[in-house]
Length: 295
Image (cartoon, rainbow, N blue to C red):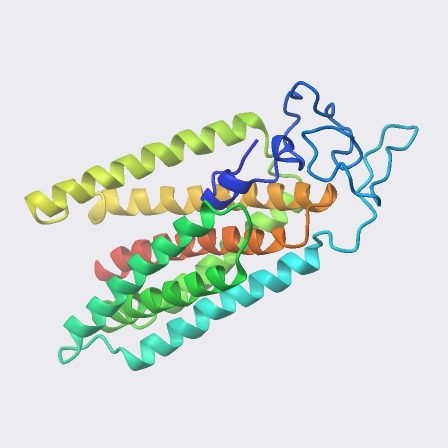
């Protein structure tokens, strides 16, 4: 099982990559479900030659390998704080240095769109790399922050100064709520949950792409998915999908920690969580912009 997050979809902590998954059927020659993937001497295990790997206990309980370089929750928290901190710092700087006013509107929008394109390219490059690149991830965070700073400044200037803070608080509340619900097991990440989220996400993205095409060639707001009643509905759906992505990401991180993923994977966890939080913030900002703009 893989997360819908593009990072985890590529390098996800799944059993077929040597990490834990959702009880996937074992491949030929691969360890059976529930066995420690690091304690098996098979070709599917990239750490089969690890001299520190432990065998399973007589009771069949999986044991994480006794290695000093395994990923921990502290590693994930630290790397995520660094990545999100870079986003926040560059967003604040771009807000201050690239004001979205009548004198600098074209320049600020141009730099913001350019930063968004660079961030997208960097995200795709990292998603298809076999290993995490901290420099690439932090560079993505920096350019993403520039884009978010310009967009946030525009919303604050032309719609409502309080919208940005509301979006930030809303994003934090969604993150905290999903984390609590996941830890309390109110949300159970299963194959059915995963399939539902993936189907909903693909439908949502396709509709947004169609709306974008109609807006580019037909003018206005296309099919109306970004304004009015439909805009509010799709904003809520986008936030709910972001919350589901968070639950999938939490599951993947939990499995990676339990099965002793290498410490470098904590950078991928931080990258994936940052992508999801940026998604939620943008959807929250759009929803609040519609609501505040109608006042």
